[in-house]
Every structure is written in C-alpha cells, then in structure tokens.
Image (cartoon, rainbow, N blue to C red; front, side, top):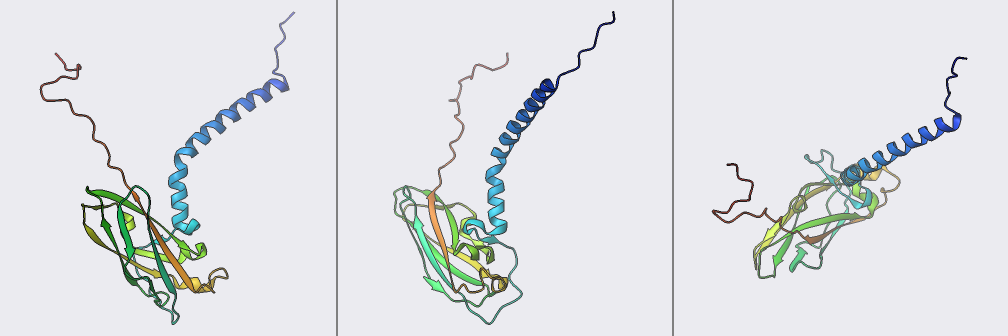
Length: 202
C-alpha cells in the first residue's frame, strides 16, 4: 500500500501562525521602543502637544490688529546652582508680530556648568501657534563661575490662533522654561605614554 501523506491539522497550522505573530509582535515592539522618543518629540513639535512650541525659520507675513498677553516663567532644577530669570515679565504684542525678549542666567557655583532648558506653553492648546525663530533652548548653555549670560528669544504668535474654536478666546499665553544640569560626556580612557594595551602587533 502506498504511504499516506500526512496533512497538517488545523491545530498545527494555528500554532505556527501564533508563533509567527508573536515573533513579529516582539520584533515590532523592540523597534518601536528605539523609535518612541524621537517620534514623540517630532509629534510634539508638529502638533504642539504637551505644550511644545513650534520652531520656524521665517516671520509671519500677517499681523492682526489684536494683541496677546504673553507672560514668562523661569525655573532651575535641583543640581544646578544658577539664577535664571526673564528680563521682561510679560509683553503684549500684536498677533503675528515678531517679538524679541531676553532672559538672563548666572552661574553661582565655583566651577563651569552646562545647562539645557526645557520649555512649554500654557494653555497647551496655544502651543501649536507659538512659533520660535530663535531660542537659547535649542542648544546647551555653558557658564563659567560667576558668569552671567543674556539669552534672547525671538517668537511670534500664528494669526491662525483666532480661527479655531479651542484657541480663539485665549487672551494670555505663558511661556515657561526650566534649566536642567547637563552632564559632561566622559572621554575614553587613554593609556599612559609607553604603555601597551596588550594588543600591539609584533
């Protein structure tokens, strides 16, 4: 008699499909874990989610005959002995008008320190319309002991803010900054002169 060919049962096919799906799911989760932070940051910058302001290259070509009160808040996280404050506590530009304001930071420690400013806007609905052209928050700031630095911020409020239901009645926006200590990157250890790492070729 001819040997009969075994046909995979429905249960066997089901188990194989589940195994493949699990492997694909785990691989996808690993990939997403690496991409989550940059994707979240990009999402916040594009949408203004979580109070993240927009970074732009050009000023507004439209200026409305309506002003918006903008107040400023400055904070320093523990571990950074800086005094950080806005020079102007508030301004009231026309919507669409380009404005330049100033903050100052002073290092009260006995050694050079680097800081990175994190920012947000409240109410959060207004963040998508708060456009920064120049800001000290785009890079790390380093201060020598006792040094004070003037740090400008150039911004405008997108006139489109008056055309949406969620933002058309907003009268005051607050721009907040918090400076956090930025740790130095430790250099790779260098062997003393004349020493070998044991891998020198003969």
